[in-house]
Image 1 (cartoon, rainbow, N blue to C red):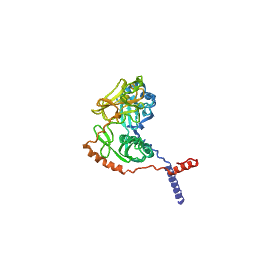
Image 2: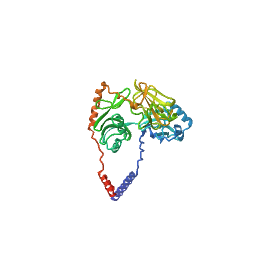
Image 3: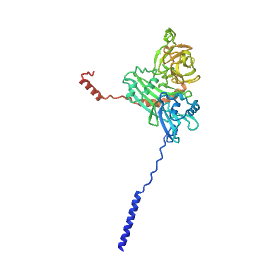
Image 4: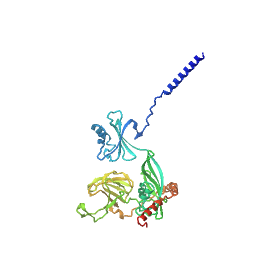
Length: 434
């Protein structure tokens, strides 16, 4: 009996062991994780085959689509549909574009073309159903920065030494254009600045946004600058000091940045184009590469925007009852009659239209209906803050001035050990370190 019981127990244990082994070998089928949605330009990119490239020299909208298996009649239909809302001829070499191609099409033809003229703006030409154009911007995050420095050589080198975007220098030189000569700043001059930077998707740097406040100490004289909007209707923004005095003059020194004067106002100038005969030159020529932006030198209203004779493409702006300016030989005009332009607005680009032997803008300046040399005029200051705004301005800048004053001046420490090594090497080579 005991033997029988032993056999039964052994049999039961064997079955339990086999059952346990079977349980161990059972595998649960893996569940596929849902793909993470990737959204860009308003689309879920997982739904498409995505092709990214840049515009090559000689590329056109039609050629890009043809290379990607679209037929000419369909391309022509798309171009006709979008011509009033998007200039397909505006595609620039080097700029990125994206094609979203259908996964359900064996040829994987494009259903959408996306062009990025800069790091923030984009244009979508969607022809998946009814052709339409949508213009958008990538989400931009603004981050406020504080910076300071002491000039050792130039403002640009000081910014570079402090790992700052040199565009801050360009902005500062523009703000202080009429109060500081940045080609003659001294060692020991120092500055503080509060500004914002732009970031796409929180991480991709997209440049300097605005300078909100600055302090520049030049030859011991401190000059504050605070950004303030004086006319919300026209969007007029300017920089003023702590006493509400405008830092700008009514006119910019030149209609193009980083250019050179190739010919001044001269009533006795001989012009090679006209056989070296004396012909009065009542403008000032600023030489610059074709395509360089031309800026309105003061606020005003466009009274002419056309092409005529030797002037080529030109724009004329009336600033007030006294002053008018004109900008000749443009490649393109970017404003029309009746437009209000602010100082620094781009009104066209440098070209060679009309009678000209090289790319430049001829800048003409009228005072009381007579063309004069702008560099010999006692130009007025820009409009001051109105009495009604002055109290609000002073209240506005109070906390910003406190923020500026708390920023400590940062100096770049030289590596003394490296200098010592260099001196030692010079002495070993018989070179005086003095």
